[in-house]
Each structure stands twice: as structure tokens, then as C-alpha cells.
Amino acid sequence: MHNNNYSVNVACLCEKNFTKSLEEIKSFFSFKMLVLDLNSEKYKNSKFDAIIVDHEMFDKIPRNLLSLPKILINKKKNSISNAEIIFKLPLNILKFNKDVIELCKKNEFKKNSLIEIKDYILDKNQRILKKGAKVLKITEKEINFICTLKTSEFPLGKKYILEKIWQYSSDTETHTIETHIYRLRQKIKETFDDKDFIKNTKDGYTF
Image (cartoon, rainbow, N blue to C red; front, side, top):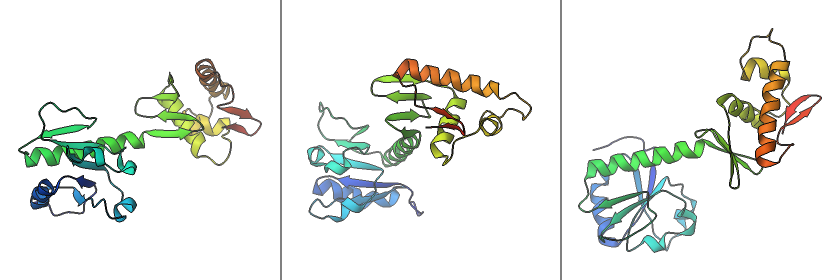
């Protein structure tokens, strides 16, 4: 039995009898399970990491929860769904608990690796910059540079970039950084036809 502070919250949307069965074993879960009442507005203000659902209720998942990872309890042999995990009955409680936790952690990691910049998506995990269907592979240092630009309230000077992002010694010539950033800007221009993604002003580099 788990007795801890839950870091993972999972919604449950199943038919009544199966919900009752899950309620009876939920003390073995290391995640918090909240049974959804579709007649109540309370669930709309709750934050969930995933949703457990069976086939009877799969088409009734509320719109605001459709993007959640789905754990399907499958009672039909040849059914097809877009669930991330499908469990057959009877449940193996330990595997069920482990797989739900791992799914939520992977999804959280994936969310944290995606950063919106203008109308681009920076995927730190995949090391790519995306805009629509176009994708550009970039290096880890280029990712660090773009992320620092994103969070900085002021343009970044060459000396700061040299020491804090590229981690070169202070006696390295600043044209080294200029060359790196020029190459990055060229790659972005060639892939996305965007010469202003990174701007070079008299105060430094900025978006």
C-alpha cells in the first residue's frame, strides 16, 4: 500500500462497476485517482496528468481533457483507439501502477522539452526547431543560446554569450561567437526563409 504525497493526478472515466473496482484497489496506486463526474463542473478546474477510461466512456471524454495521455481499459478484443496504453482485464495491479506513473513522467518530460518562440517550437529533447512542417536540427549550444534569448529581458552582448553560453575563456576573440551565430541565422534563413528570427542590434542579439 502506498502512503505518500502524490505527484501524479489521474482522472478516471469508466462505467460504474469498473470504477467501483478501481476505487477498491486505489490504495495500491502511487498516483492520485479522481473519479470524474460529468454532471459536475468541479473537474474543469482540476489539473490531471492522464486519464483512465474504458470503452463504454471513451467517446465521452470531455474536450478539455482530450489532449491528456489515455490509459484504456479494453474489454473488447479487436477495438482500435488512440490511447497511449491499453490494458486487458484482469489487471495486473503492480504493472498498471508502474505503467501509469511512467506514462505521466514521460509526458511531463516531453512537455518541459517544448518551448514556444514566436510561431516556432523548440524541442530541446529532439534538438530541433520546428515551424509548421519544416524542421531544423540544431546543436545543444544553439539550443542554450536560443533559450537564453527567450528568457532574457535585454539583448545579449557578445562577451556574455562567449562566457556564459558558449563557455569560452574571456580572451577568446568575439568574432568566434559572431561566426557561430551567423551560421545559426543562416541555417534558420535557409530552412524557414526567416532572416529576423534572431536580430543583431547595437546592444546585442535579441528576438
